[in-house]
Length: 355
Ligand SMILES: NC(=O)c1ccc[n+]([C@@H]2O[C@H](COP(=O)([O-])OP(=O)(O)OC[C@H]3O[C@@H](n4cnc5c(N)ncnc54)[C@H](O)[C@@H]3O)[C@@H](O)[C@H]2O)c1
Image (cartoon, rainbow, N blue to C red; front, side, top):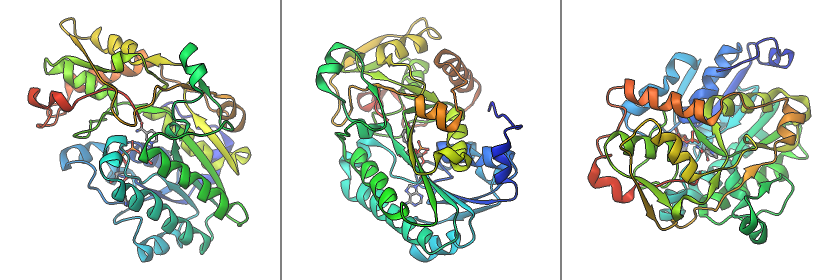
């Protein structure tokens, strides 16, 4: 991770207790590692059921967290106990898959809405200095139709939001509830809207159509065609998980981030077909197959990055081609990285895009 250790803002983290909900997941675990590197004492609250043990172990949370609590953000007593001992909170726990939320809106509501409310209630009863709420660019939906027809839209934080999936709707609710509940309180907040996150050791979830880099790389690695939903014309703004973690930590400490909603993306639109091409460059035999767009999968756009630059002083450091090179190298050198269910017979559920 390209950290700037001389950044004086990070001195706020020295010895600070930072509760990271969802700290056992892909992004949360990378945030925890960064907090540890900066001298904070990260505390993880996670259900640890989003992945099998083999995947979870690669996230290596135990090595970096001061404390790991197996629990749920809906458990009021647990969350209250933890926020009562925290200086900062990063709320990243979520039922974090577009397709899963579409299949099970009840779980999406319970984890992402009820869970967020429980965290906010607990924070209001605590002395927490700042909360960072992890949201998603999915809140933008397809953006303005006319613009999307001409070119990929650039999504700015203050434009109208039109979520097209259950997942996105829960994130939109969370954002607004954070503003309503913390806006007049003594606890500061910042909201970060991640664009499409990728990077090792990311492993797809069964039945998901998100996380195209692992889906496509694992498809190529197992001799299956790379699936291009919607013909691969939709675009994504791909951000490496290391850059995402760094931006999230800066949102915790940057003075100008207080009360702000900030895109975390690179500002570059890449079509799904182009992403497939970058992966296929590592697999000369790779084939492509087109398939319909799944429900809730947006046509996509790219981030307006001015706030991330002006308010956080954050810029992405890992290009997409470099990040894909790293991912493929990791995949090829990690025995057992491809889950058992990712067999050719599972290819019918494989897909690209979203997140
Ligand atoms: N990966 C992306 O492309 C992307 C894009 C935009 C936003 N996000 C957001 O980033 C955050 C992290 O996502 P991720 O990609 O690391 O996904 P992930 O599934 O790897 O991590 C989410 C973690 O939250 C935990 N969790 C889920 N429900 C919980 C609950 N009720 N109580 C406690 N823990 C719970 C899971 O066990 C998991 O470890 C999420 O809020 C997600 O919505 C991710």
